[in-house]
Image (cartoon, rainbow, N blue to C red; front, side, top):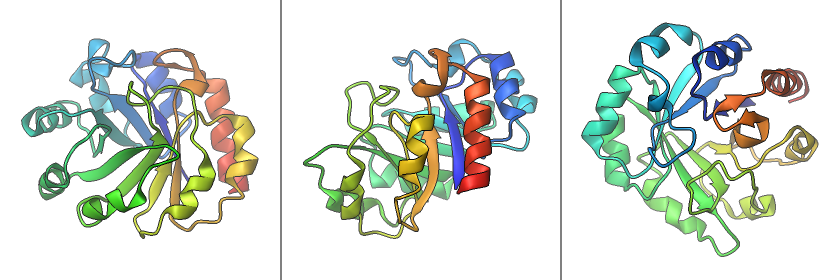
Length: 209
């Protein structure tokens, strides 16, 4: 099971989390987010502080050229699209050389057939609870809905995950469950992660999953 720590924006905190060696670290480039990374970070800061972790740039309904420029500036490895982006944009980013994670907000009436159009154009899906704020809500969706998922694209599980949820996550018997994505439930404040909690998370996943 892979681990993604998302929503980081403070230099010293990023270094502290990177030292714990999660598999992915997410940086949000959506201006309306309280975890907007470019407000605190510069490209020079991110170029050397996270060397052995995959850096994910999170975007919401952003233009291709802007995504490309930010990814180049901040040395982003993987693009996460968290809005209503099209399969065409996903493929365009893949063609440019990026791994693409397409996020979907899950709710009771969500139609998993919507994913079919993205199947050939994304490397991963991310399933979060549907909100108007595009993530970081601290809430989770009903995980039983994942039983409706029929494709073979690996996915990140997100949305209000806490340490107390790990035992339940272990009961999800789905080979496509690739990673756990955590954010607000591991924070001291928006964008500032509690490294003690993150360390416990990483140790438990590495030893129990």
